[in-house]
Image (cartoon, rainbow, N blue to C red; front, top):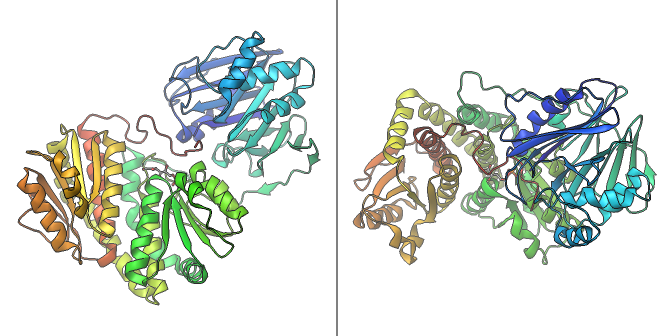
Length: 587
Ligand code: F6R
């Protein structure tokens, strides 16, 4: 959430370097953006609302500057609220990622001292605080003093007109320094840097970095300088291009058969290791947020049903409040595409402090969670550019299906199911099948609400499908356990209300078909998804019969429906839905 990029070195026109860096980081937030460069001892600033896309920058040449792409937390999406923010003198510019939890208190004190605020953001207090300290001390010391006054999980990067240095500090939100030849970069993550250099220093919490002629890393608590640990990123950053597809979202949906096969054929040893960890743990806790949380929840059903193994599930943002019983024998399995979701990182760090073992299933090498983990499992789904998660979810489900089967000594059976799922998804992605989904999307384009029901693993499918529909097409969709509707939500069903029913050919089939009848009796328009048709369905989307892996084609159908619903509704950029960001780094 929010992308930071900074540069200091010898290049003469760095605003375009910063702009390119911000473009790479735009998935972290795309409400507004801005850059500040130092030119002839003065800080120049340019800020805009909206996405960066084809922006051209008007700033003058410079060899030091900072930039930011914003996901609004405090204050509306306006140019004034876009970063960088300046102090009252216009000599300090600052960009920020995180939330300054005590900003109101700090703002009151600073306003009392005569500081004038130009924005509604929490961020601006940080730059005025530095301004206070810089009256008496050097720039870097002032940044350190100011940062120590901020409560919450934050990263700041600042520059000062009389100084040839960029100063950064972090606690919680990520920051990485790129080390070039006579030049340094700083960014929220490596994707912003790797085009320029593969040598990086991962800044740890409670550290600050001073980037100038040299790089200094300093412990915030005692001000002691420590030797920078340079890591060579030998990872290949696959270039994500849309190719023949209009949107990354559609491209990534189409990549799923390959992703499933990749996991089926290459993840056998990962799966063995994960299964072993679960087997020896005294209490396993699956954690994730949003779509990743649904993968974690699916894990509980899969492990119970396939492996007769109990594991716990919690969403990341609630896990902090449920950690009292963790012991060194507990195992946390954290799921995250980005590896940067603060609602997962924070409780996982707490669990680690309690001695629990940390396994992470992530898609991003070198991410914060990846570095924090005792056991690392990479999905290998390739870069996921669309904000709406698709292939990373299917990858997690595939890995969990294999692991559940490994836990009951039947990995090859799990593999067969995955290979079958990959084949079925290929069929679903064919023109004729997609046309049927497009036709349904057209039928549903004016509806206000869609309800989805399923039981067991299909309950998880409908939660994930509802999220896809909501965030991609802005249509209200809600997933329910089939048995739960009659306890209240059925009151919402009226004539023509679309109800999607996930009906795999398993022990849930008869019961979910009865639930569908209950909906139909109240006027519901019933769409069935699964291997077996039923007279209750008004529309039916057939999948292969793949036991637990039936979930995979069911979800792919829902992803396509969400995408085509968005297109039918005239939503121009389904890759970047409003109000969202790919990487959620605030709590
Ligand atoms: C939904 C979506 C989000 C993410 C969630 C966690 O399509 O993408 O719900 O799943 O923000 O993100 P990661 O997996 O990066 O931790």
